[in-house]
Length: 116
Image 1 (spheres, rainbow, N blue to C red):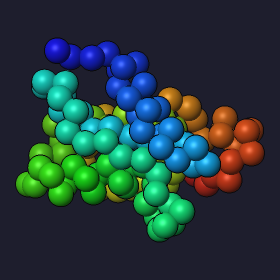
Image 2: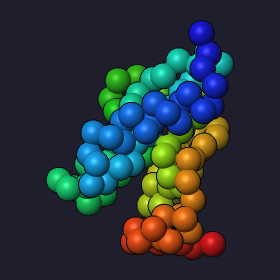
Image 3: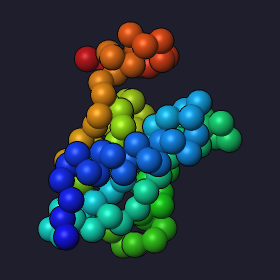
């Protein structure tokens, strides 16, 4: 059963709740089937580069290698930072969906890099 994009974002929010001080989560979904291949969340308290998107990419690669990234969508609670967006681009993922924008996060006081 395929879920809607809103359902996948909600799942990313559930993942984000694992670390309330860094509430960023992500899921990777196979486009053709709607299957959730991996879930991740921000682990930057241990390692500054393990944002939710990096975590979910690492988990997907570990569990499903080799991965055809072009057939996958990434759903994340917030617009990916430049580091994460670069990883997503290098992977060649089909589509990225995000729940909130970098400018909105900045308005809320989150330190963000905006390269618009």
